[in-house]
Image 1 (tube, each protein chain N blue to C red):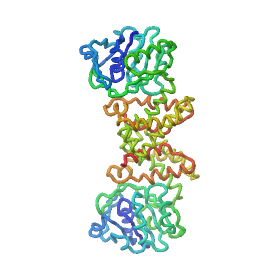
Image 2 (cartoon, each protein chain N blue to C red):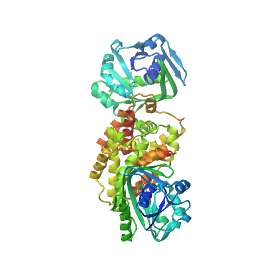
Image 3 (cartoon, chains in turn red, brown):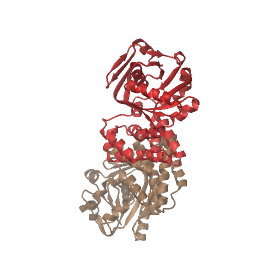
Image 4 (cartoon, rainbow over the protein chains, first blue to last red):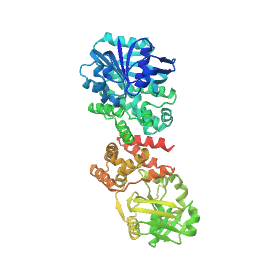
Length: 300
Length: 300
């Protein structure tokens, strides 16, 4: 199978390099790091064992890539408006696209752009960052859940799972809606609140007022899921997320890093779309609406 | 009538000095400014005409004051735990206490401390600040609404109103609950949000997201009032408050000043109590609950 990877940042750079290192044929599209990676390859500094790829199939323009069987999109959703330009040259008739992105509603919107392209949602559980051109720092975790959105070829889906697993990436198949909303239970409270209060996950849980607030925000995601008829997102899961975060080392979620480094924040897919979707189903996420407004104010 | 004034800050210092300047007998209790005021009097720098009081009846200890007919409390509510110590020496059998303080539930709690003392709520519409010992800077506005909470002597109530008016203070009688909740329509959104987002009233209204949020927060106060059966607090009043704030010069509410100068914030009476009162009546102020939690986090 030919893999295409759009973006060689914290996500595309890590998962693409792992696949390439395991022997898969991987073609990378990189705008800003092209020259560097072409010359010096990719370096992955990883808690699971660092490695270097000397020869990397890297391209500066989408037209230069071969048609791929699987395209992994590792862009931030704030760049998804570029997909109509970046994606088509990589697609053949049966290409499946894996969107390793954050938030709710991403697949629905990308499907609108590419009506016939089979999509898979990729939910990464990883702490990684691109520290310099051609270099990814993988601090911890690293598993990925694949949620089938519109890929009818189940054999292909299973093959992708297997390729990830063979590359040393813990990978599992999960039900689409449940997986996206479960991830939102953690993502929506912690991404925004660490920005709004300029703080860390552990300090939010240490203060009794914000600990209760985090729980309230998580429960809004649970109630929204219920209004949408999605099962498996419940109070027990909220407790599990709180407990997990209590046990984590202090952590800056991706939105906090984006804010600190003056990059655009993924407000649309982490807040606006799920809030709209829940509201259309009759449930208002009041506190998350407020958080969205605060983030919009802070993002100007 | 003998007036006692507890606190010579932005509120007690201003209204007490105005009354004294108009010829009323006013006795001031001041802990920190006692020496200064004793020696040099009080200076009021005012947009309505500055003036100086050369001789001021000022005392350092409550035991030193005479019994008063009216006691004006100009403390921040964060100091109300001191009232059982400060107030009793000033009270005779018919003393009425005017609480010129912010928030909801203040009179109820003070009444619990002094079961038989008649209380009046004072709602000040004023921009003033104590800039240095014995000196109050009155920038603009200055009217006061008196809301009868438990004063059965209507003649006394009218006399107080007249004394304020005669002292050049625009004063009116207003219905207690309606007045307190109407004030909360402006106070709850703007005090907290200027702190939470470290900003100003005009910038909150300029950004479309926070403009909508301010409106949502105001509507929570309206809905709470409805749940409590209080009339006169409605959408039209919300529109009026938004329009008024649009026309105001950029403004830092008292809580923002408290936060900036590292003084305790009046979270309890501006948020906790009204949220509790509304919740007990069956209405949850979701977004204001979130704002309260954010303020508690920021106040540590």
